[in-house]
Image (tube, rainbow, N blue to C red):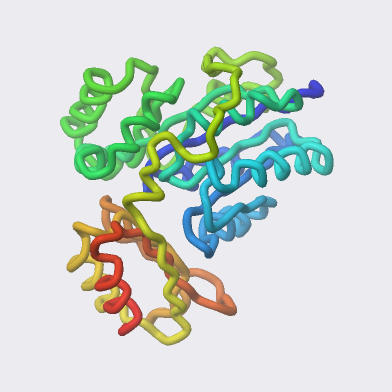
Amino acid sequence: MTDRTPVYLLTGFLGSGKTTMLNYLLNNSPKGKKVAVVVNEFGKVSIDGPIIREEGYEVAELVSGCICCTLKSDMVRMLLNIQERKKPDLIIIEPTGLADPEELAISIRAQKSFDFRAIYGLVSSASFLEVRERVPIVEEQLKSAQTILITKCDLTDDATKQKVSEAIKTDISHAPQFFITNGAIDSPLLFPELYGATTNNQTASLPDTQPAHDTCSTGAHQSDFVSMVVKAEQTIKRADLETIFEKWKGSIVRSKGMVRTENGIELFQWSLDGFSWVPWKDIAEPALVLITDKKEAGNIWLDAVSL
């Protein structure tokens, strides 16, 4: 391993499949290789960290802020600490789905200890066409990416996948595209350092200058959305929770958490692609994180705490 640690950034809107892809990479990496993961979540409670940790991997977490602005200095310190303690072959950063990836990349490239390799942009084939209309940051994220991964291809037909692909090529970016199902990526191509190669033809071409300000250029996560945490110690009926999301699906953009239902503790996830329930081990403090637009946040909160 060289003195400069390779760093990759996975960007994509909330629910685009970043954690699923990351788990696939970790579970299929060559033995003996060390991959360090940094997860940044918009809310005060981390959900992605425990999901990855459940697979047996160590995760560093930054919560309640965005690493491209308010937590930028914390992120750099964490990366330096990981490099010194763990000496990883590779560092992968999964920022909040509302982050500006280009500004984050510039911050990393300013550090001589790291070799920033690429931004990989993820979009859900099942919801991209709707998401891009509601959330402008999605297009900005893709413009920064050197490679675009179109995910959740098992949830859409070929015509929809082609429509998504053409929309990105025509309106946003001509970066190479790959279609992904269940997070299954071509790991040697995207992360060659794990397989003995020292170069990556996806390497990022970004300016080496540090931005002069300390807020995201898009400001989308600060001005348009709010994160709420609902403590869910009581048993919640699946149907009741799903009813709330059907009612407010025009205002909620993402939700995930561990909740106690009639079936026991379950990992609940909701995005514009729909619902997902997965059995989970018992936890001390079940909680649900909701990310919504600010306009209806108060009404959504009242419905959620009434469960």
